[in-house]
Length: 441
Image (cartoon, rainbow, N blue to C red; front, side, top):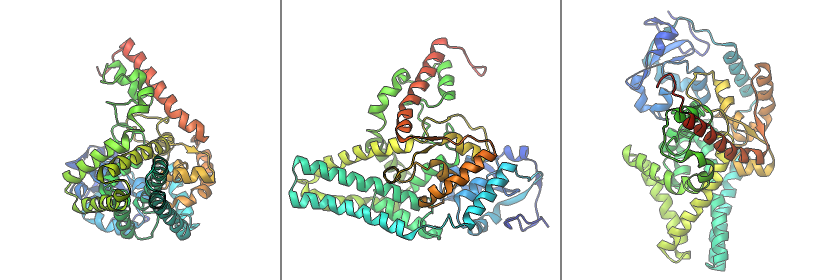
């Protein structure tokens, strides 16, 4: 019989013994193997059934996915039940690296200390304050009438409601509010659907790819937009040398202000959500989204002079929210290292692509605690109210393993978005003008 792994994942006769090189040959959507705790699984039949979408699994195709798998799931015993049928053998050299072993020890230690336990009062207060802004929006318009001043004040209140709803659905999506994964998923469906008008499947599909391989070109959808922007130092040089691209990348740091924050939520995300909802035939998601728009219409259209007045006001809210969302989410990623997949270990990969931002009560609230981006990426299921307390442990871990821990002021983090876009544009322009072909050309 195969020796049991620490978590008891292998409990049957192995069918074969594989080397890492052999497993690495199987990384396509019609032939996908992964390594978990020294055991090899052919997860090809599971790809389409995976709740987070097939791509997040494919990003670890042919690789050791132990740390990512452990980090993304709360109830590992439940997940293991699905894996038994896909077990095909054992890894010849199943030894973990020292940094991976230490990280799992750190994660286990933090769990024993209670850092993965959610604060019920925190999330109740967060939920209630969202509805405070919702009813304040309605109250301003109902009591004072629809004037230009109340129109703007109500828009600011509703933008705050929507932005904070976005941070709340993010909590449920990461399974960090309840102990039960099923309950987290169920409330996430309702929160993102009825409170945001967005598909939970679409969010899982995009967001977990980002967490699986942050700032990895063609695997992280948040930084893979080469026909609009080029990020980092590596990709712009490659594209410049090959004279690729259709945009005036020399001024991307300028047109970012027109094509980035203003348009992401009002235009691009609306279209992409609808596309995937219909493509995947997501009936439940579609009905919840319809529910959001019906609530929004019947609540505010009578106060906005009808459908078209409410329509214009809604897109102005999304315009404001889009700026909030883009600057907060990108300040911790866009200026960081961007490259193709180098198959780095979990900790190194997360630290290369993320940075923390200074903390204060206002910044924590404004960013939904995403200013603790390093802690969030290392421990995606950890409740965000615990990040500040966990940070010293992470800093000490990084010192031990000689990994740079990035941290910035709020101003520098925002300014670095534009600085990094300018640096990338200069790299592309220099390579384009020199036109020194790559070896692969």
